[in-house]
Length: 184
Image (cartoon, rainbow, N blue to C red; front, side, top):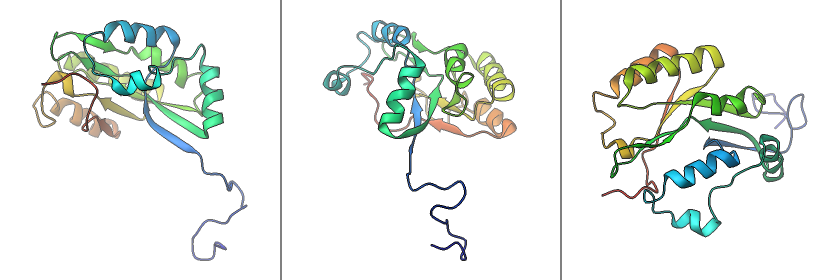
């Protein structure tokens, strides 16, 4: 297109012919975090996919992850402060801390975007942390992995989250499709 009708101009200022991917949800991927995650999830997940690919990727450094992102044509990754509750054993088996996400977003803000987490069993604490993540650290949304908590998306425990996200003008990303957890 030549740009006269509002379309992009190939080769124009700021435009490239290469389109890069944006990964809209990934976890902290340091080797330490993935090892902790692998120990915690024993007996929790049915992970044929993970077994097929040899487990979730773990990187020795964020720079190594960026190098592999570049090789794969990934421009940016949304890193989730994921909170996962065990349906069967009733414990938080993934409880990503804000600082673990900040190591990505603060060092490489042009490559990583933060998504705050939400625990509907610790509402006040979660809302406080979401506000800090968004207002102080520039997180762009909230990611909720709802399955193990065993509550529907319209449960009253979710209303404070929705109200907080409206107040902060950020979206909520909800895991609503099939998951790997062993669920009834």
